[in-house]
Amino acid sequence: MRFDDRRQLDVENAALIALIECCERPDTWSSLANECLVEGSAVRVLRHRMDPLHNPLREHEYVPTNEQGSLFEVEDMPSVEYTAKANAAWNQANQKVTQWREQSLDLVTVFDDRFPSRLRSVVDVPPFLFAKGSLLSNDLGVSVVGSRKCSPEGATFAHDTACMLCERGLTVIAGLAEGVDSFAHRATLEAGGRTVAFIGTGINRCYPASNRELQKSIEKRGLVLSQFWPDSPPTKQTFPMRNALMSGYGLATVVVEASEHSGTRIQARQAQRHGRPLIFRDVVLERTEWAQEYRNKPGVFVVHSVEEVGKALDRISFLDNDVDTLLGNILDAKAQYA
Image (tube, rainbow, N blue to C red):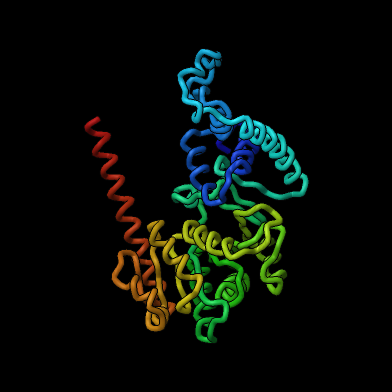
């Protein structure tokens, strides 16, 4: 953990939840998470929002006075309504953190050392996750995504790709949807590998209902993650948000099959935004205009077979090692002249 003990982490988690509850739009959650990460404390951010005179960098020196208020314009000061709302949210957040623990719900915030390291590095980092299963902060995985109504060839490709990833010791990441996702998850479990499911609902729900047993199996032998409140229902917005996290969590994304209006487009776009490589099965580019736009972009691979997926991953690993070596050399050189 990034804090000394569980109690301290609980306080930070409660402050983070209170800040989120005071947000007017969910799309501001990531900027809020980044603000708290930069500050290093959700408690200090919450205090500052309730009282702009509070300087978190000189917390031990802070003694507010009436005279100091004259240094600020009226609009810079928190409203009575916001302060009351924040106080209520703080009290409720403390109750929720306790309640979730009593319900055996594993809340993992950006302040927790268990929080996935690759997600922490993306600009749209979620402030929290709920987890069921085995959480690894430095998980090495690849997303396998595609159509819900996939062809038999697409199902076979997803199955064989998942098995190949298992042989390499990589985690198979998918979204627990029907079609490609389900074939990838099931193949991984059958092969004795590790699979992570990002879901577009709260951690207490299952969608689609037909995958309930599959979700339970993944909870026992892999990991299920949700970025939403525990009982949140599925909506049109939650699945694109889920796709963005799948992209950020993995080393790369394999697009097995997709239609012209497939939600897979969102993950492809997010992968490029996150600087994550994309591996397209060739039929995706042949059948969709949106995928053709990626053909000549950096970090994009087009493959015909599962064997070629493996070769693309080898190339990605080689390039990553080159970057790591280059950065290491730069740091060594800097140290010599320091």
